[in-house]
Image (cartoon, rainbow, N blue to C red):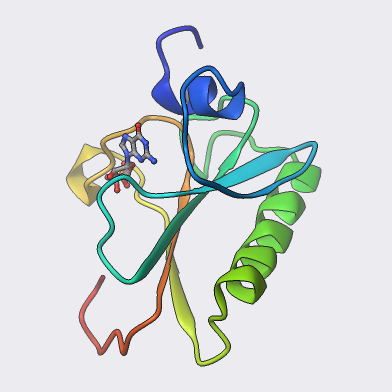
Length: 111
Ligand code: 5GP
Ligand code: ZN
C-alpha cells in the first residue's frame, strides 16, 4: 500500500529503530512509547488487522518476532502483547501490528 506508513517502514523508506527483522516481519520501537519497552511487530506484507486472512507462516513469524523482541529487550520478567483492531479499539495505523510492552510492572489495567 503506497500510502501506508508501516509499509514504508517495512521497505526501509522511512527510518525506524529496528529491533528485529526477517523475511516476513519487522519489529521497531514505537514513536510514542507507553512503557519503557514499547516495540511494534508488523508483517512486511500489508494486512489491515489480525483477522485479515494473514497466512499461518506470517502469524508464526510474528510470534517468533515477539520472542526475539522479549529476548533482545530483556523482558524475562514479563511483557504484554496487544493488537488493536478497528477504530473503536483505538487502531490508528491500518496495518496489522502487535504492541510489545514491558520494562515495568504493568499492573491490571488494559494497557
Ligand atoms: P494503534 O493505535 O494503531 O494500535 O498503534 C499505532 C502505533 O504506531 C502508535 O502507538 C503510534 O505511536 C505508532 N506510530 C505511528 N506512526 C509511527 C511511525 O511513523 N513510527 C513509529 N516508530 N511508530 C509510529
Ligand atoms: Zn501497510
